[in-house]
Figure: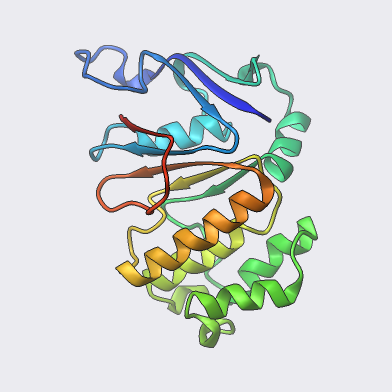
Amino acid sequence: MQEITLHQTLPLVFRDEPIQPSEVWRTEVTFCRGNYYLIEATSGAGKSSLCSFLYGWRGDYLGNICFDGQDIRKLSAGAWSTIRKSSLSFLFQEMRLFDELTAWENVKLKNDLTKYKEEKELRHYFELLGIEDRQNTPARILSLGQQQRVAAIRSLCQPFDFLLLDEPISHLDEENASLLASLYKAEAEQQGAGIITTSVGKHLLLSYANVLHL
């Protein structure tokens, strides 16, 4: 996938509300593979909805969203399965870890499906992000910051053309946020991928091709 384009897209819930200034909603926006994009928003502006639209989980919007010119509403379930395995990776704002599994098991579960990363590389990520001593800890016991780092590692356990990051450092301090930014940048460069990240405040420090206000 080389491009994601929004054509006059707007969440249905905003349909009857007064028009608010936006550089994303009700306009034409194209995200190109290989570039990094920051979407800044206030709470309730629809940033998580946008990520869900792009990932194909929700279709309650006006307008169109296209992958390389194809309307995503016309994609089959099989096509979506392929896209989520090889073209789109998504870091959820709420992490969505399995509480009863350990940090390592949460990561390994996805990597067993994709066979994308070597175990030693994943172990290195845990060490790099300062949670190597939490690998055998159930996710429910981890702090939010630790959970966010585990979810970040999990998001790297697959190939992707675009990486969707919904408030990826909301629970991280400056040092860990910087480490995660470096990790994402290295992975995106290796895959020639684009990054689309949202923020309601602090954001990943990347060289953004465009900063859009939602």
